[in-house]
Length: 286
Image (cartoon, rainbow, N blue to C red):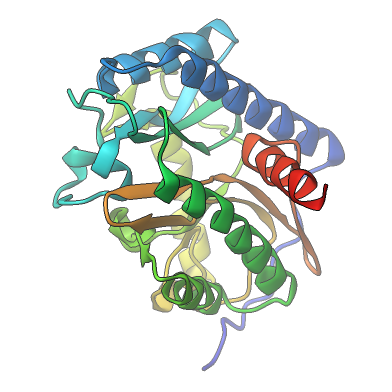
């Protein structure tokens, strides 16, 4: 299987840039945690996304890569999703024992983050098991990307791990079956805060340029399991979102992965899901 022969671009960001991306990602997760503490049985998905947007704007967010999403119950596993419109928040009410996923992608001074926050209300042993196993995917993805495996092969390795766990791949339900996408600093000059089909106008302008540029070099800024992702990891920032499900429970994380010409690392380890895994490991060792 031949990889793209075009030389990979140089890593495009400075340490100062990475700091700003990290700040935006922390802001996004902080707001998701605030909304997670606020929601309770009876709250609808639309109310949750409105509260998430309010929190983000109050924190200084100027624009959005995409509008905030919230999924409750079996919608966390994208059950019976057939059209893109079903991803948008609806009238589903949160109930005791339900899982939920909050997803937001704020932009501050052009620096973009795209995060996914999973939680539950009350007891849900299935969610507990999936939440613990999600750590395996974070470690697997980093290991495979550091080894410079083609992106479609990394996707296949994630699929194999999902099957080994007895779960099913839910990121394949996203448009384009993507498990991730490149993130860059938005430089477009379209109107801020205006969205089209759920994506910010500035996002669409920037993503359009990236798609054209990368395709000319045999690469894609969208990470899926097809021919377009049959290339080595492109240096830059990637928002990565492995999404797993078991029956009516789905969970994911989404965070920024830094890929350089010869290495890779997660932008920040001080994130809710990483702290949860660390706490669980510490408790188990006592």
